[in-house]
Amino acid sequence: MQDIKQNVRLAHAIASIPGTIKAVEGHDEVALRTRLKAIMVSNPQVHRALVVDDKGELWSEFPIAKDAYGKVFSDLSWFRYVKKEKRPYISGLYIRPQFPDEPVVAIAVRIQSKGHLLGVLVFEYRVAHLSKWLSNVRLSIRGHMYLLDQHGSLIVHPTISVGHILVKDYMGIDAIDKAHNGQLHTTEYIDFECY
Image (cartoon, rainbow, N blue to C red):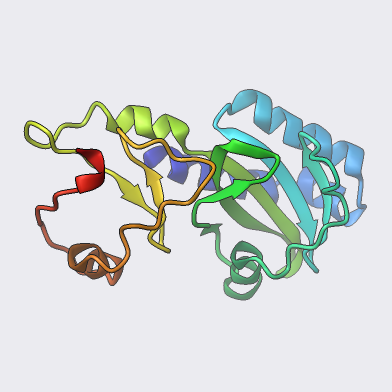
């Protein structure tokens, strides 16, 4: 999960540098797309990077997704949270229709000048590599670690493929609900889906 934290810091750094702020203030799509492309080249876990304005309308992205320009994201949790709380946000897992085999989480940060919101920078972060990492972690003979998002959707599991559909089978399980509510504890859970 350190990798996700590093990407939050990277997104915040990119959103804060004067060149990014200047490109957003001037609505310089070419300059901004060049910056987004550099992020993608240097960080293969970021599947797509995009910028929306202060109203949530997408106006720059890399790579370009069909029919994305002009789409309004103001109703999405990452936009609402970043706008209101003025802090970075990591979304729950989602699957995009254009890329059903590439489930992602959004890492969203404010682009601002003198405290005024100019827009939001979003990294759509691939989670598939986390499953490979978790497959190396063993808890007893047949035990596994898995990761759920804040909505109870399965993000990564070493033996269950995530993609095409959101797996929400873990909500309503007492141990998971307790963890979701912030209670720290250790428990044993038998996941019959894996056997």
